Every structure is written in structure tokens, then in C-alpha cells.
Length: 224
Ligand code: UTP
Image (cartoon, rainbow, N blue to C red; front, side, top):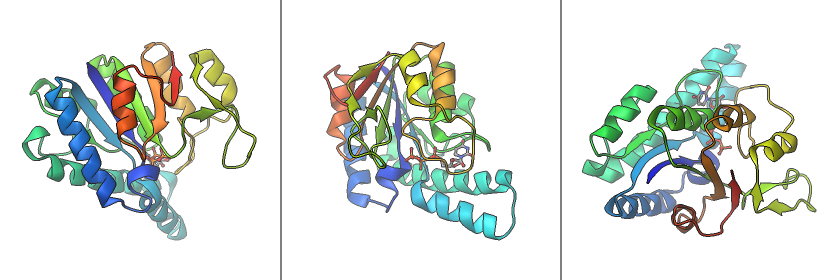
């Protein structure tokens, strides 16, 4: 299966969790052995947001803020690459074409952000489009998509399954601001909608959830 794995910076990088990164490296090895083709997109987490606020304090514009956040996400991608050794391409792809090229060499591509004005969710969506992925799995810091923000509403209910159209109703806010935190970026959903690729949102603190999602088990929230 051709899988795009989007790992939230909120999961591996907020704070930096080396044990979890090692577990992800093991998981990726397993997936590779099983014959899956994988592109990993990691976010920059709190460190990226720290750099965004440093840039703001320096009166730098949104583009500069985003560029710094992208650099941070790429450092995290590099950590994965170093840990994966020959299983992955040796450098962080800087474009969707570079990611596709890495994949065609039979290696795992691990990347961060691409360009200002988007999130790593949108990067994952662009990769889905470019390589024609079968599945997008997002490992996040929640158990899935809820009917309202579970951080603000204790009575929020997790949704097991939903359609792209349902999702549009769950999120109304869609304007990009540097460092926005949403379970899945509405802009990315817009890109993914016409691709009709299956998306599974799972709790990324348990990498075994990713395996379950790939195996078609009931985990997290399935969006089709
Ligand atoms: P994300 O919000 O996508 O990363 O990017 P994350 O830390 O993984 O987030 P969670 O864990 O899913 O919540 C962080 C910020 O980096 C900039 C944006 O400002 C974005 O909000 N960014 C990232 C870009 O400008 N371009 C990119 O291609 C990626």
C-alpha cells in the first residue's frame, strides 16, 4: 500500500520525545518489510511555534515566521532520516517531486514543511496528490476527530467515521495563520476532498495505531 504518514509535531516534538521517535523508526521498518511505500511528513510542534513567536517579536512578517517553522520541521525530519539509515533517502525532500523521486527509489521519504502559508497537513495532501496514495494516516495528540474541540469542551464526542462533507461542518475556521493548531487543517481537507483518499486520524502517541489503521482495523476516526 502507498501510505502517507503525517506525524504531528504535537506528538513527537512537544516536547521532543526520543523514545517515541525510536518507536516510529521501528514501526517504519516493519511497514517497509511488509512492502508498503511510505512518505512521512512531520510537523515542528512547540519548537516551531516558539520560533514563530521569536520571529513575531522581531517584527518579522508571516512569511518569515512560516519559513522558520518549516526549518524546524525539517530538522525533525532529519532526525527520523538519521535514525532510519539506508531505509530512507539521506536528505529531506524539499519539493513534492523530490519526495516522489525518493519513493520511486524504494526508500522511505521523510519531510517537513514545504512553503509558507500552509500547514504540514497540506503538505501531506499535496504528496497524496503527487504520488497517488491509497491512505493518509494522521497521528495526532487526540484520539480522533471530535464533534467539537475536546480541549475546550469536556462533553465533546469522538466520531468513529465521517464523510468529507461532514468534516466541512465540523470545521468552519479555514483561514491560515502561522502556527494554527487544528486536528486536521481544513485547507488540507479541501485538497484531499476531490482525491477521495481514505484518511484515518489516530492518537499518534501509540504508533501501533498507525499499524492498525493500515490494516483496516477500527481505530481513531476514519474519513471517506
Ligand atoms: P503544523 O501545524 O502543520 O505542524 O505546522 P505540527 O506541529 O505538526 O502541528 P500538529 O501537531 O498537527 O498540530 C506548524 C506551522 O509551520 C508553518 C505554519 O505556520 C504552520 O502552522 N508551516 C508548516 C508552513 O508555513 N508551511 C508548511 O509547509 C508547513
